[in-house]
Amino acid sequence: MRSLRISLCAITTMLICIGIVMIYSASSIYALDKYHDSMFFLKRHASFILIGIIFTFLAMVIDYRRLKEISKSLLLISLFLLILVLVPGLGRQVGGARRWFRIGMISFQPSELVSLAMIIYIADFLSRKKDQLQDFWKGYLPPMIIMGGSVLLILMQPDLGSSLALSMVVFLMLFIAGVNVKHLGAMLVGAVPLLYILIFSVPYRRARIMSFLNPWADPHGSGFQIIQSQVALGSGKFFGLGLGHSKQKLFYLPAAHTDFIFSIIGEEIGLIGTLVIVTLFILFISKGLKIVKATEDRFGYFLGLGIVLMIALKALVNMGVSTGILPTKGLPLPFISYGGSSLVLDMVLVGLLLNISRFGEYP
Image (cartoon, rainbow, N blue to C red; front, side, top):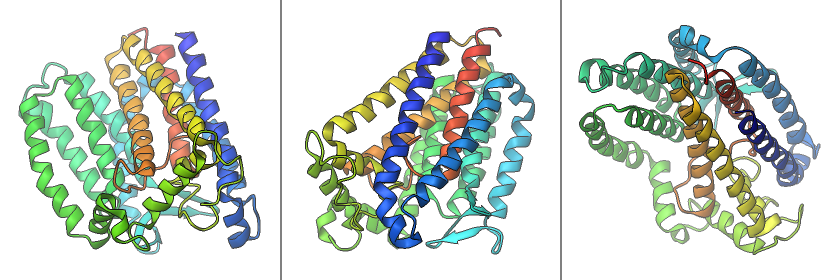
């Protein structure tokens, strides 16, 4: 699978390089105004990439099968960090959300570690319980309890987007593994009223849904971000306004270098640029699934599957939000958006996928 590894590395490198260029383009004026340094976010992003390279290398060289031995411990540690981040004085609060630990210049989001730990734990569970997956008590309930506890802690931050992404990845892993469809269906039915309550009982979430359905009902309030995102994409037309010539990044489009960087790509590089990004992610998913399919080891199969699903889902949601297809959710575009722990996690996931392609052929 050497050719697959080379292709995956090349695709990931291209996405990261595009991210470097677009983060500087999207953030330089904002950084100059707020921090008096146009390269403020670029420098920090570069440091995150260096950290990511180190952890990616470690993820590649250690036999991934050893993760089975520490899957439960890693999950417990990540859940403990989720609890700690909720403690005033320990967790950093931004915009009413307490999701980060701040260590010097570096911010760390424990929900990212939980996503990794959960994928490893579920992959280990599915590899051990392959003959009991149809059983409610042994094959369905244990991962549901673990996932439910994790999602509850993430919701307390609050972070509905990350909790939904994690839930969907776990659900798809269980479905593909062969967990009883009736049990999974019952979970979906039960999740609908809960999701309704979570959205419509919280004013800002309800406003997001209403603005998604009709952003022009409140163009200067809840619909402002979606409208500006679509203006950016529409302004780029086929070939874009030119690199660095975005107008929406001039304090019109909030989070231009993070959650809505895809819109800036569309404005500056046009439809051509966005199609290149979409194509690269399609190729990434295709190469990743080929690695998964070729993996003989059951643990490696589900670990790789969870990794591909997580990256694919984050990319799909981010681009869907930017284009107005999906309601606003705070999920970054993998490898491209500015973001510390998110970028490092994505790079580690790629390292694990490369690791699986090396060792997974031999059970």
